[in-house]
Image 1 (tube, rainbow, N blue to C red):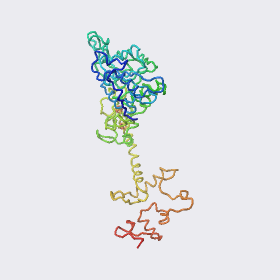
Image 2 (spheres, protein in one colour; image 1 turned 90 degrees about the horizontal axis):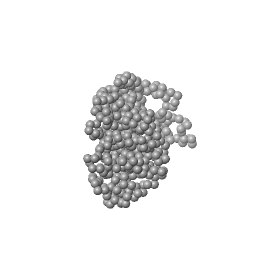
Image 3 (cartoon, protein in one colour; image 1 turned 180 degrees about the vertical axis):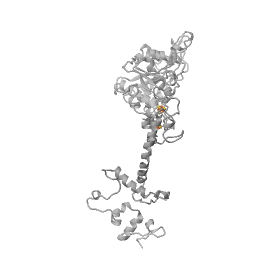
Image 4 (cartoon, rainbow, N blue to C red; image 1 turned 90 degrees about the vertical axis):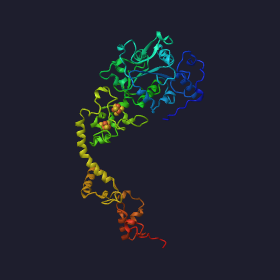
Length: 485
Ligand code: SF4
Ligand code: SF4
């Protein structure tokens, strides 16, 4: 998809339009654009002609709430390309309502101007449905000291003097907003399963969004929490899921398929191993001994064969990168139980030895067979014992044993089917009886011969026309016979 979305010049905000609030409010700080992001987005839409979305919804609010997180999922979402965040924000995709994103880092407004939209959602005063996205795990706010939340967003009541306010935790925002949310999405392993902040010994008592809301939670569309795991989540996994959900909400597509853990089923149905670029090394029983090796990483700690993750298929950004491509092992970052059930990293996972031993055994059998066929297939039919490469004289060294082995092995491989290669077949000849010139000059087997053998045959047949033109037969010292002489 085209990534470049341009904002029309006349959509820039210098003065507030009628109905826009933020530019005229007295205590506004840190808002260089003089408008709410939602207002600017509305302007872009109205002036950019991107409002012709079929379906009843023109826009959907997305409230991105941070918990115990490193913001990595926000960063990877910024890098998404299929679709990109810009495309979702500007209504560039047919049938997809505009995403009005409310995000603590991407927002232009700050302070109460920022919190205001959340309050409106709580009051049911928004003019469109909303989605909650939670990034990070949810700390146990019952454990906080002095009523200072572990993770907060905004302080309430809005517009009140500072000494009369209380910071509101994102856990409380979720508790209040989730029942009326159309969809609630957990992004990243911290939000989906608990992740690193919920590892053993953490002081915050953090849990995942699903654990926080409970198994009976349903959003207003009747959906439990949707989980897009990863540490961080792959940006495209998230934006693709949002895209399909927006289409569904707008009546323009079916409800996407989710698995028993609420993951997008098409993204998490297979293991890392299934699409790993090192898979063939595993299959032939070749394992890296140290990092930097090109072979399979199973014996230095890779959990890929048992972890559901699509990074080897999708790449990390724009189809590129990913753990094994970059030389890393799979540490199970997409899996429930990460990190505790996968530590210590870089140690071979249990049961690796039986599996890799079987691969080695299998590899010991198939590798020589494959190398033999490879050697045979890597040769022109004209090359018998000799090749014409001047680069590697040893390339000629196929042994009688090898040639005999390959003869019988190929017959086994092609048992009851046709052997590939250059064979004389009457049914493949010209129906008119036309005989191709090389066959006239050299005879039937010309395709199997090098030029010196052809020349020999042509001399016997009296069809050798230009002496000196075939260096293999006549040598470079023989001048080329000129027909005109
Ligand atoms: S590096 Fe990991 S995922 Fe890739 S083939 Fe080896 S075990 Fe499988
Ligand atoms: S391959 Fe493993 S470590 Fe890499 S993203 Fe997937 S689950 Fe995480």
